[in-house]
Image 1 (cartoon, rainbow, N blue to C red):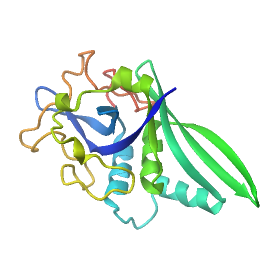
Image 2: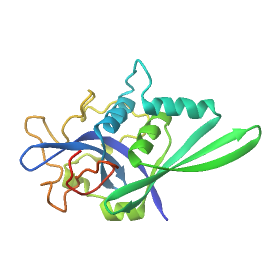
Image 3: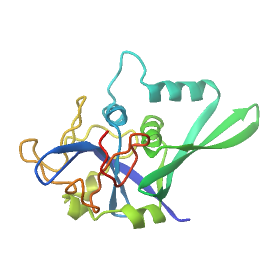
Image 4: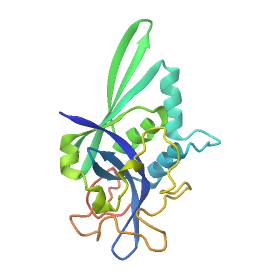
Length: 208
């Protein structure tokens, strides 16, 4: 299965044709395409803090996980977004642990949102499979990304095109006149939709 390294373009909020705010979305850039993955507000906030390098008084869940992994003598090698089934993205986290001179490799199933939030903190690669990009990749021009050089990898500095506060800004324009990232919630072509149990979804119309 061929994979492509992805950069994080940013975190924002999808907007309907009527200008109504939707749910947070993280945009990955891979194979000259944009891969939108809708996530929960908490996950979006965690990613934004990592992108901005915002210090937090107490560690967020992903910060705590990274600290624990390091304390156990392990490391996160890469995050792989390798499957899309029934509108839900799936990911794996590849890790390694050393005990003396012996290395142990471990793979964990994960939500892509958790994987991305961790990758941004440890500066490891995010890989996306051809199968996922074939199914869900979008033309950057279709989403209003004229400048494809704005890609951001793990550990990159703040991008002025996206919000840095607790709530991500609207994607694709000014807050008072946002461009649309998708369409109606009941339109099957929408890159939107939510799932109460697993927010890393591509389609659907159930609210959080």
